[in-house]
Image (cartoon, rainbow, N blue to C red; front, side):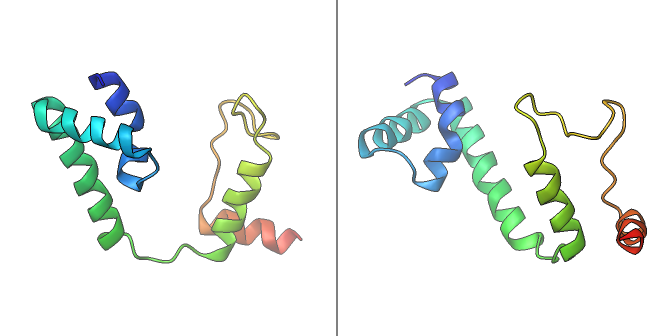
Length: 102
């Protein structure tokens, strides 16, 4: 296990989505590699902050628009119907206006 492999699999490691063998190899690497130990602690802390601080409920209209945009994304990762320089506007004002037009 090297540092690049560990970083590529860190989310799988934290989610418990690895084989027992790979999990042991990553744990061993984290214990023996100070830079990867720092990276591991960062991801653990980040997940904790998100889980405890990001508790505000996203409005249903915004969630629906995000889901629709993801479904319409093409294989290259572009959102259909949007110019490359046009940002996806998920603000409440924009969603209210588009809902009113329906």
